[in-house]
Amino acid sequence: MESLGTQLYSFSIVLLAGITLGIFFDLFRVIRGILRPGLISTPILDLLFWALITPILVLYLVLANWGELRGYVLIGLGLGLFFYRLLLSGLVLSFLLWLVRVVGGFLNLVVSFFLWLVSFPILLVQEARFSLSHRRKTWRLRPRLRWRK
Image: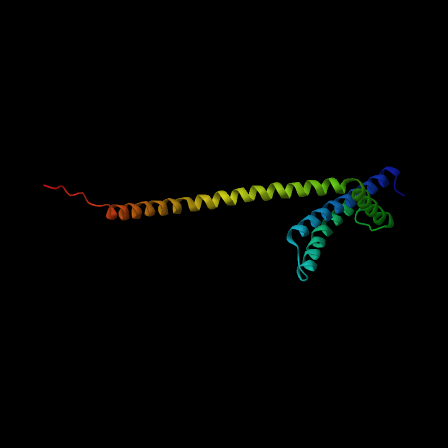
């Protein structure tokens, strides 16, 4: 029989695994909100989520109790996920949405600057061509002054 300290350590690791599962699930929710997957891509994204989270959960189980799957592991995962959803999910979702807005604004700024940088020489050439053609037209249309004798 294991000591009480070892059992509490194992249970706290499993609770932390449930909280981690909740964080990844909220991150997944934000990504799905941005991408808006269709009928075909939804199962692909779900498989990608579970392919990402399964090794992480296995690592937690190895840390907690050498990978043994027991009843208290499922209870701990469920409790960790429940407490996360109850206490922290709103804060994490707000932070993730704020981060998406900041990163989106920054990317918009970078793309706009890049487009301006690429288009500025083109605009200068067009302005120079217009000025030259406009000068030629006005020079031709200007009446020539003739000196009368």
